[in-house]
Length: 407
Image (cartoon, rainbow, N blue to C red; front, side):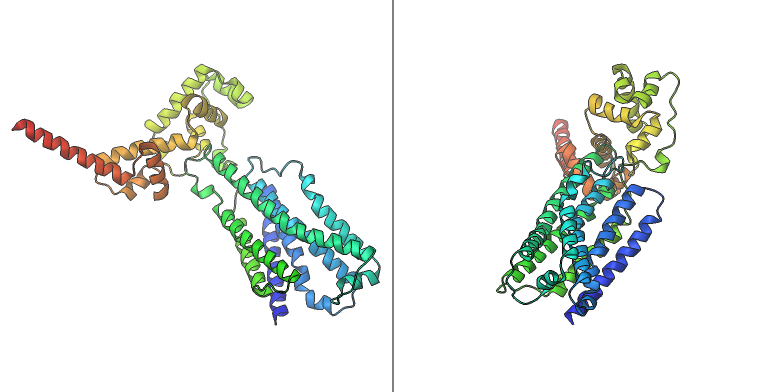
């Protein structure tokens, strides 16, 4: 019964992967991201082939077919964590580029492929000995091959831990870069990957315990079917969320329209051609005034989806110039600059109106109450509610002092 459940789980995983691959290949936008995700899904499908056809293979004599199935599993297992990391790297890249020097990461998969080929091309009697359930002493070539296979199987678990670390580090870097482009980052932070990473860590622990039980029978863990169900749930969630993702560091179509720049702003025209090097101090000061006016006069900060590209289109300047001016002249990131203006307006509304904190949250441009509280406390050192209460206490003290003077 346990084998049938595992076979069904593996078949379901392959079906989900094939659906995801077809969906990715039909997309015309963000091709690098979609293809990276399709590669990951394809490797997952390959990794589940042994489980889907395990009973069928077991009914045949040990030989070439078993060697091919094992080689597929070993190579795909060594590519799983790597392919997920490549997808996350591409998704969080400004240019949707894969990691540099990717060939360095292919050493382990290449070793796995070599061992798999040696397994396939090896003598049939050697394959029969390696696949035998009997406790047969190994020597010579079978011992060498079995040792290589065992080391590579251990490497799968170590590799998964390393790439989970790399993925989390990449996401933290990506979160910081979002603040240079978006005033509200909650919808772009890829928090689902943190969840996937946490579940992946739990799955890694479970698999490690399973490996320990295979080495030492005194270890008792959950049945293999439960681990397989956990893996299926993890993969399904990854697929559903992954197919919905768009690279946040790439401008939307509406933000890629040509920027209209006045003929008198020769330095800003040069910005589009030469980048930061063409921005003179005078042009930077003029651009800083425009940026401040966009918030103080035009109230662009009230747009919860405001981005650096949208601000660039509004004032007719290069996004690179705006980013440089914010960092060098104003001294704030785009995220901090916009949210400070939101907080300033919120302070005014808290002191002059009876609107609820939640209503003010959305009125000034925040799209989440938690974001409003964090930004408000960072700027004022108080919560919005505490700030309003402090104003009431101050007014009561002023009224009391006025009455004393009158008497």
